[in-house]
Length: 316
Image (cartoon, rainbow, N blue to C red; front, side):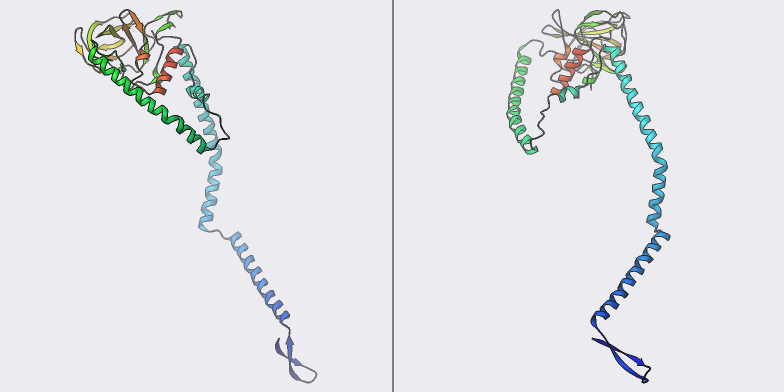
């Protein structure tokens, strides 16, 4: 109970007036709410009339983005059109060269993916590990057996192993062309026998020997296969390198695998710069792709087989 003095005009005296706790509490609450309302009002007025440095910077950036967004959107559409045009042009060039559309290896590989959305990641990982480990051990055993066979062949067979390396350094499966078989001739547009593999590369790219041997023939010509080098590797194997821009070896020279024979060109009758590479065993033309398995990964080798077999047109 609180009290304070008030003046009584009837008897000209001050007397004490008592207040209840409830009235005091209401008065304090009224003052508190009034102060809080004024503080909120001051803050709103300050926020509306005055901006901080950070707010001014953010508003300026928003205005800038609003101006740039239409230009960026237009540039994005332009880039999408350019990419689409490049894809169409690439497919057109590939179709002109090989009479077939570009194969999408990823889409073909995705057909073999396991569709198990309901399986947990841990279950998939455990299942994959159980399948992978035995195959990995088996592949190591096969690799060891092959290496032993190769060593035995190299030690016992005259002439050593057949040519197993690329005749162009850094060659990838994306540059593979038509291989052995009946292919459409790019000049006459009819199917003719194609005895080698077209390996697309820029003019001037070094061409190297695929295996040890002796240069059995060097020929300069403006017709047919153009400038060619033939190497005898022994055991009935020979390799031929055609359409060379120049030749950097002579007949009868003994060479080692990797020695430079010349450079890629389009001498003779060639549709575009490339190396026409042949492997012969006695009088039989072999598919060179079959001898690249030890130079690339299994995935690359599968893609190389697919591309070389699907190319319907040769480049010479």
